Image (tube, rainbow, N blue to C red; front, top):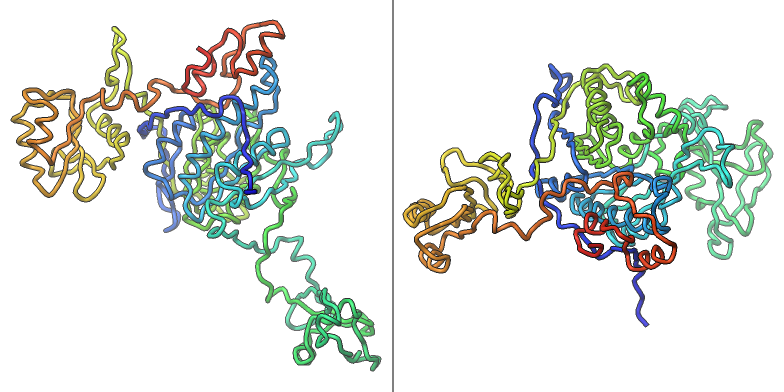
Length: 565
């Protein structure tokens, strides 16, 4: 009998939004760059994107697929407090569906040696684990870390004090990804002493035996001489020496055996010098001494914004450790739930490139001012001293473009009049899978999908003469996708036969069925979701089974279907 694949099911799982790949519009007034270079390693091409994070992820997909080394997200924890008006269970379905849509794009954005880190609490952690197994493959699950986020217990808790959050870690490919080992922290270094004034400096010691028996390794079962008492010392038959006799002799010659403070211990230990030790493998429990705690993070943000705190920030030390384990300087970091901007601030100070996405107004009230302080070297808190941050670098601010297709006053789909010619060309490039790159010499070459395949976008009605001129310029060795409002004087079939190097498509008809046009909010903020009408228990239970809410059409908005219509 073959293995069965474990899958998580929920109401509306099969409903997937047809996302519009929006273009990004820079607002130079909100972008920020240092007035001078602080070092040769300053990074200026970071991105802060204001808009719905699912649409923003889709907007990034074409340019950044396979290029992001680390994704750190701190999504809404779905605690249930915002779901007072929802039938039991439906809130999990909404949350899981919207998380699934984001995770699928995140996977495509990650490089082959990239990793995803998600902070979450007990309420959804285990459902999210199974969901991530489904998206990334269970084989690519790396670890479930425990971040000790509280210094003191929550004595008002009904059952247990919620002292830790989960950090789920997934690799794009676990066969390729490896965590960076870490330098020892102060508490680990404090374990190295020098009680015998060894000129080689501080050392720690470990057992001279190993977990093997005399039957398994008879060559490791022998007597060694206690240097001060002359006694023959034998190991236990169930735990023999860790070294063969020749290696043992070399250890004696190197002065590596330690026989206790008085030199008369009955069992030796072997010295491990601090100067010779390797970086340590990351632990699965992250205590607040190393990675900060909730109170520390609130103090950090309060110092940056007195009287205007952010409710759920993460401490800079936590993000620092994530980036130390998962990245190297110059790597690209993505946080699509930017919150107060901690990930970008830490990545900036650590010399990593970053992209952040945030829909809330705190993008303007918290993130931009915070990053400006980082860039200007006016943020003394967080990890600034630990990494010796002096300021520098910058970021570009983008907002999502409005939907490409809107309805005119008669209800007909038309190109959004807010788009200028360049924006229209860029949008059509993205929709058709071309890289937007207008040529300075060829007026018809606005983008390319290969070295010989190009695209031209115009709102004109093209005549046969104009098409002939285009065909002549393109030549037989290249091809051109022509996106125009209409072409007249020739049928589509005749055009294909007459100009084999041209492919003609009419806009907006060519893209009408592609996307959910005009849908601007796929937010995980459940407060923005429509509420069910009051109903009796029986209809509500019936609606829950069918995936609907009585008298409500929320499924259409969330998943792009007609189930609740």
